[in-house]
Length: 67
Image (cartoon, rainbow, N blue to C red; front, top):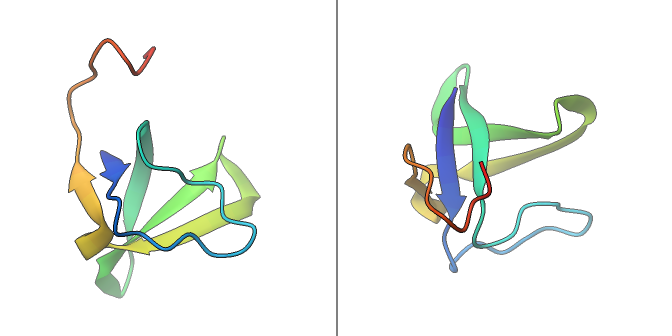
């Protein structure tokens, strides 16, 4: 698991929950290391997969995160 931020280039799909700004915890997809899987609050029913090109690593929290 790593922390990521969504880039402005990301085209959110209908029903997607990820937005530009906050950090999200995600994991590389098994079998496709160019995409990251995110789960909404750990709920397997709410998932979103994003290409690495639309993400930036964000291992450090900053004041705007509220972490």
